[in-house]
Length: 93
Image (cartoon, rainbow, N blue to C red; front, side, top):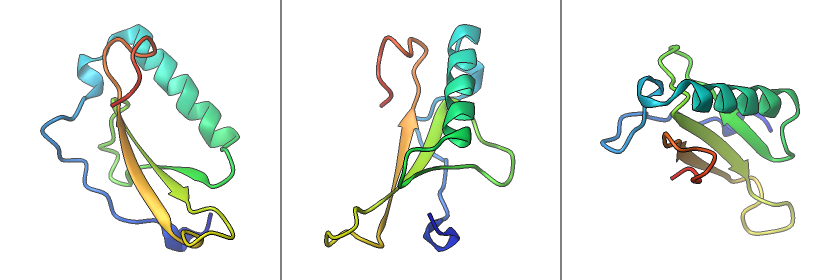
């Protein structure tokens, strides 16, 4: 993905989850999955890392490129996943 697709993202949200309220088992799992995604990202998907270092493992932001050959080509869609304390038994919100 090109760097021009990166958008500013605000982490402020009343429904946000922070790593302080996640159990160690969940933090370990999320950290491992993030590391794996950085090493071998799926095509067209990119994790957005907060440049100020204030990011939380409880909130993961990703950008997804629109598929080639569709009206969404060259478009970027950003989403935020909020990890709950019972992840991976429950999906992110």
